[in-house]
View 1 (cartoon, helix red, strand yellow):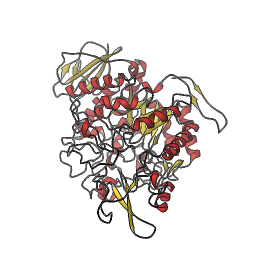
View 2 (cartoon, rainbow, N blue to C red):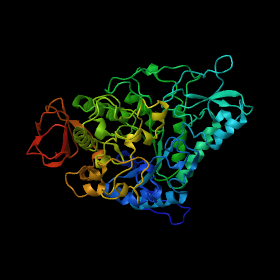
View 3 (cartoon, rainbow, N blue to C red):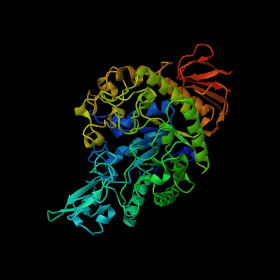
View 4 (cartoon, rainbow, N blue to C red):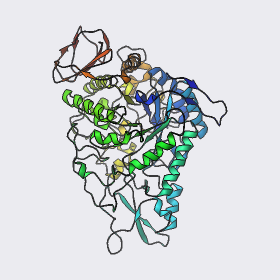
Length: 570
């Protein structure tokens, strides 16, 4: 751990010095409303997060990334921001953020905040001013307003569809009571897109960056980092039937990608890079290696690497890895492609298996269907996962991921082996996707169910009462943190061991040297002093020589069963 220094006055901020900590960091995503509830209202909050930080220190992570906690009407769980420089009362206050951050820093944990620059809430004063000012005003120029097509402008400006389903355009009623212009929202109608061609918008977000950097934030995860800039003229576009709603590959096999010429006119436009070069200059004004991490759903990996060139962002999520099917050839290929693409621009590869937008990998890796990106799974999903197979593969996949060089992201609860909650009642669902598709897509609620901390407590220790904003399943009692603590075979202890060994053996700074001859289903390599063998097949294999340091399932002698990963002393 690098040296720590702490400012004493409230106006001063913590500074953690060191050299490019983010290249090897394990970063833990916290979804605030579902992590820990301090006051019993059923909603997680900043004070709840602070109270549980010692558990994350004991887990062995380097930083936390907080999903949005800004002022918001919460129509999209906080990704509809009404004030970028304040905390929503649902989660606490700016003082609560300062306290959380101070506690985290005292524990040696950095704090990364989520930034949502593609769109704001329709409740944001900037958008309300745009509605009031009318067509042609400077205020409307801060968002993407256009006249409609048709004799009376009754048709949307183009055929774009929302990521959440339905039209990506909504028509407004003008001040005189007549139907008026349309505004673009790539997500919910309550999330109007900014016009990033506007110098005014760019200046406002420089101020937002500085607001949180001045308060000691260690960096930003940038939501929809491949959005923001739209193609000139906003041309019609019909995405391929098998394409991902957020862009990226149209298939789940690495190496087989969408035609770059078919890139959606609202994703991955070249102009986004000018924005990030400007932001990088802002971050470089501050000490302590503050970082930018991109949520960029683009394909192929060589294209993702454009977001992390030396003068742009520091990290980009490796969604190609997340989307790779559980199998030896596919995993070897995506690991090779990732290391080659990111190293070509001097950046570390990142690795991720779950987040708040996709089916948890303890379920996803056992799905027999193809419902992986944001559509969710539920009772009527074809090919629902086998829970035993899913957890076994998840443990093996996590052990494989944490041995790879670079930086890894963990999503809250994956260290407990939490599965996707499939059987949420329709009446409890809150994801806009569910409503905008009339229940055709289940959305993301199943991966956002509040965490279990204490198996025998109300709301499984999520809060002091039985309330939780999404209902928790009975299996949470078996998977709660206190139930797994100290149990050598538990998923929690597997993660703790993997993270400790990762640090001790310097795996984040290492390199991959492939081992051959163990069969197509086996992913095997050395990274420094550790040999990693992941058996993705059904048939058992014999492990190569070396002391077993870790195994995702109990071993009998030198036999490595299917869906199991082992680390050996090389």
